[in-house]
Image (cartoon, rainbow, N blue to C red; front, top):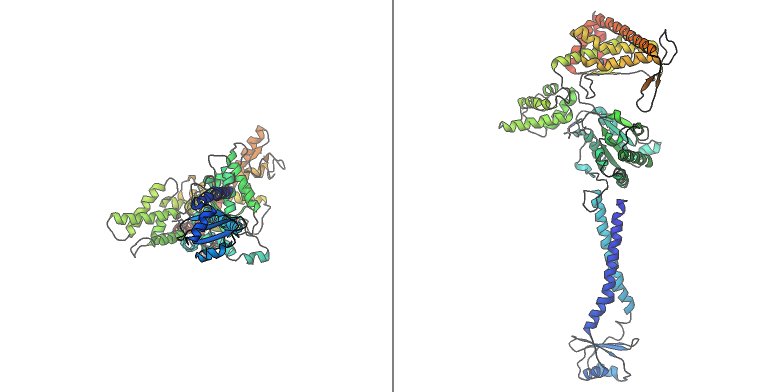
Length: 609
Ligand code: ADP
Ligand code: ZN
């Protein structure tokens, strides 16, 4: 069933009803009324009335052989047949009758058709059009019980002028920069069309919950001044099979009509999850297939830009993320110290705050909090101020509400204690230091110790210079050493080891194993493949293909390789212990250190020594 055709169908029924009414009215009721008004008489009565001067209007219809006339007061209409009567006209004139001749009845049929049929039809067609337009508008807008069943209830039209702008989204500069291009395109698509550039059809906003993904999507629409359609992935998947697919179809149909516009699909992982081939969920797959079809269907330059948000990008079906669909990924990370401070300030504008509040201090205390949590913290502080009978929130209110909010979130999100933060700082600097000191390892670009919801408590962004397709054995070994560097730094500087290195251990082991089983980089085994990649496009799992004894040997070799690199990393860390302390301290205080800052401190120390 195509719901969009519904109003048309209803319109047709409406027209039929009108036509039927007109038929009944004109064929049955009108003649009855007419007959009730007209009184048939004989010619004699007509003559008598004429002679008595009791006559008003007279109409002689010669073509149909009858005369219509009224009495003097024109209260009653009479009808009589025509009789040959030569002096009639003079006598009527003498009686003071008002002649109508045949003028009224003559154009009769024609004007009757126009008055009784055409005009009413035109009138009702106009009304019908008006109603149907109203219906269309409603369909586009809020839910209307009658016309909304099964259609996409995309919430449309967060009208752009009172909508959200980029300025309302604090921090997230990288994300805003990526999205600014879309805004520019929506403003002035010509510039892009002229050169032949196509805008990406879809952008994927990836990041933990509450970091402002929805806000950013709205802000794009707000900045560009275009309509904003939003729908949550879970809304597509409904009880009835096939509804999801039809909703997707409708959403895109509406969007195409309103282009240029933004379509925002929140929680896209609800429909865009990997089709693993084992468990089947027909409804979800149909919906996903429809989405893929729609995205392929429209041209890149129609002005419809699809933004989708997810906090589980790794679960998305590869078909969704391939070029031509959601080919661009915009990370929306948890805010760092500066970002947190900005977010606090943005939200503090909405409440009354004492002027002497130290936002930096609060931002530092709320390490790891998301934008939504920070907004909540500000709101809680206002509530607390009211509770205590104050007119404005104070520093103490804000600090207190950090605990209120965070206590509730502690399990979900990692808010680090001071000691943990210190350990993480050492750990991350350990990675970077080992990387920097091995000539062939890529230099670090940025280190942060803002906890990621992905589980990592810190993060080192390395940058490969130029395209890099081949890796030498030495490079792989250095990489393994870098992975172990975090744990080594903990051991050397803090004196105890933590669980924080679990991901590093996994990665290092994987690399070491691949060296032996797939890359032929072990002298004893040589160029023999013990492992094959089973499904490269869905996850890249591997399967071992060798005897049990070989497996044991491989395991031994893996341990050997990793241990050797661990020792190498330990040497480096011990040798540069002072720099480790200094850098870790810097990172602990600032939470973020860029590659340049890192190298500066590293080299500075070198000259001092
Ligand atoms: P997401 O879609 O990433 O889960 P939302 O965009 O829905 O997050 O954000 C939820 C709320 O958190 C917003 O309404 C806003 O009040 C607050 N918020 C989140 N990030 C920011 C930010 N960068 N600047 C200002 N407010 C933010
Ligand atoms: Zn690590």
